[in-house]
Each structure stands twice: as structure tokens, then as C-alpha cells.
Image 1 (cartoon, helix red, strand yellow):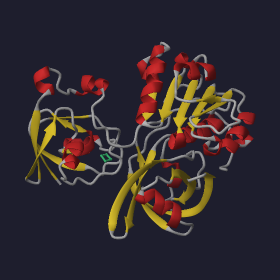
Image 2: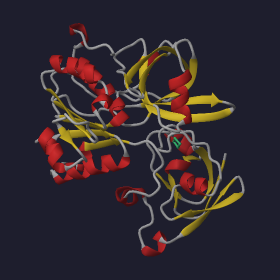
Image 3: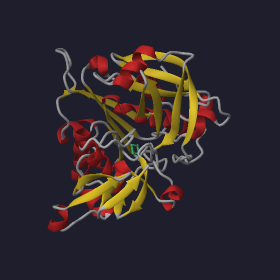
Image 4: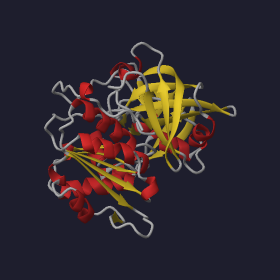
Length: 367
Ligand code: FES
């Protein structure tokens, strides 16, 4: 279990917002590994740099770059620790069946070993006033970035009104259970609710799929809360719809998403300048990467289209966070909507993120 707040930690300076630092490449040392749940481990890392582990905001992520049997892998994981803990940071990672990187981390990565990273990444961070009622909603290992927020709130604002809502498969899969119980004893306005998607006999709590009724049972005032949500895309979509149906403002809903987005969400099409007429929706554009042509269906990102046609663009998060898929934009028009993986200066120099850019015309890109 990670440190819980002490009375000397709890001085509150009046704001929950953290400034987001510029991503930097760092080699970190593993200083500890602990089991969190079956198939889930927490890796404790030390950044030897003087500004070290304080550089991120709660909710942000880290890119790990690994060389496994001669192949390079880039993977992005949320940071679970709080930047208010100065000496180390933590990643809580589930071993994915068939996942080369997570399996390697679980089986091989051990104290004393070093790993190449780039952080902090992403814009999924606490940005609410201290008296805003919050709902931290997660499924599975989506609890990690929310735990970073909760650990931070425990130190900065222990009286904050917080509903922790977590979906796990079974009782053994509930993440951070012991620490949540400890935090609840110290945070008078923290409520913790868990529902299970596949409980064993003997579970008398909430069960089954996410529903408006289940959310209402856990947090009857869900619609007035600002929500931070992380989990599979379908889960987050359901929570978002329920939040809206409860009358909440769109701006009060924040999500963290990892993984390729194959189809554009309606809202993104509306805000990103993506094609809107029927004619444009049917369009197929030509794209050239270093002179090699591939086609891009309407609404596809350059990364999705390239991958579909075996054109390789290095990729980490596929979510506009890590910057791995940065390419030079030589000609044509794209609509880019990213999550912090590219700076304004890089954009001005003609770089774009392939995972976050949808062509509006034929385009030419290069490494
Ligand atoms: S793959 Fe991470 S920003 Fe594109």
C-alpha cells in the first residue's frame, strides 16, 4: 500500500489544479514492485533528476520505451502516485493476456533495473475548485490515474466531497481496496462504491453492467458532480451518457482514453473541422508517407489508415498523448485534435501527430 496522508501533509493551498510540465525523456530506476491484485502489480520508480517525481500533475501518464528481444515497444501508462510524494512515482499495471510489454514488466522488471521513459503526458488532470463535488469513476486498471487524483486530494483537500465509483470483475480484482478503506477513515466526505461485473456467489452488492440505476444507487447526485472517468471506451461512453441524462454539463465530464480510436466520435467531428456533408463523408483521400501511398477513409486518422494498409508509423498511446507518432506535414490539410502529445512550437514547425490527424484533403507526410 502506498503512503497515506499524515496531518503534516494536509495543508491546503486553495487550488486543486496543477500546472502541466513539458514532457522530458528520463531513465528511471525500479526501486520496488508489489502485488496489487491478481495480475496487477505496482512498480515504484525513482527519477534521479533533481526535479524528479514532482513533475507531473495527478492523472497524467508516462511513456515507457522497451527493447524486448530486439524489438522496440512504446507503451503509455497512467501514473498512480501523487506528485506530492517527492521521492518516487508509481505505475499500477495489469498483465494483459498476449500483451508483450505488460507480460515482460510483470515477469522481468525488478528493483535495480532501469527503464527509458518520457513524461508527463496528457491533459487528463484535476481542474476543479476545492468545493466542487467530484465523482472518480473507473473500471479495472482505469482506477490508476484516479488514484493519483485521490491520493493528491487526500493531502491537499481531505474534506473534499468525492464519490469513488469502481467497477471490477470480482472481489479479488478490486484495486486499492485496503488503501481506500484507510483513506475513507481520514476523509470524512469520501464515499467508496464498488460494483462487480462477474461476482462469485455470496456477493450482495451491485452487480452487472453499468446502468443509470446502478449509478443512481451509488451516487444519487451524480449529475451535479464533476466526473473524471477512466476505463474501456464503451464503459466511458455509457457513463458519459448517464451523466448527461442526469442533466450535467458536458464540460463537467473528463475522460482518459488509451488505444486506437477507429471511428471519430460525433463530438470530435463537430469540433475538429472534419467533413460534414454527405459527399465529404464518403470521400477517400490519398496520403503519402515518404513517398509511399495509402488511402484514408473519411474520418480515419492517418495512423489508423496507415496501419490498415501495413504502412508502419511508430506509435505509443494512439491517443494523442505521447508524441511517438509525430510526422512532418508536407502538404494538404488535416484536422488535428490531440491530448498534449505535441507542443505549439512543434506544430508551428510543421509537425503533426498521425494518431490524432484526420485528412481533409490529400496529404503528404514524412518522418
Ligand atoms: S501514438 Fe501517442 S501521440 Fe500518437
